[in-house]
Image (cartoon, rainbow, N blue to C red; front, side):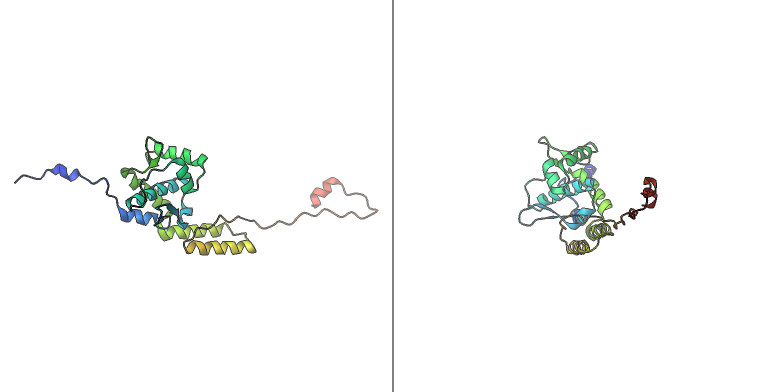
Length: 207
């Protein structure tokens, strides 16, 4: 009988990932279309910053491959831009910074993906920023409502509709505009016929 080689403890399966942690981090942020395998943004996506959106998107593409819904996880900058809503002019510099920081990897064709050793860092970034799941949805609703503090009339109805949509898991069409309360217009003094004109400097002090 031979002794067990202690070096065997270093053997790992590089394809093994913590599916539970990934599911928890992406819940409410990104989902995978069951028919097409496309990555679909969820309400909690709005609570993430640009860096976290990119990491979450690339992680979701990996999930699509793990589930057998997509053939490849690598994404070109144009695909990252389309999947995150970040404009191409901002997405490319952001991807370069993530690459320089060793947070993402790039293949020979210019596509980006998360290597196995980068998944833990992506999970930490996403969880710290958005909270994951219900916490992300609650934050997105809060941000949407805070932007409507000065909204009145029909626009307030839009805000309420947006909050209900977020709670039901539906992506709102767009952000709600902030509208500060209207300020009263200054009134110029009325000149009575026959009276001398009011000096200009008095106009400014009286207006």
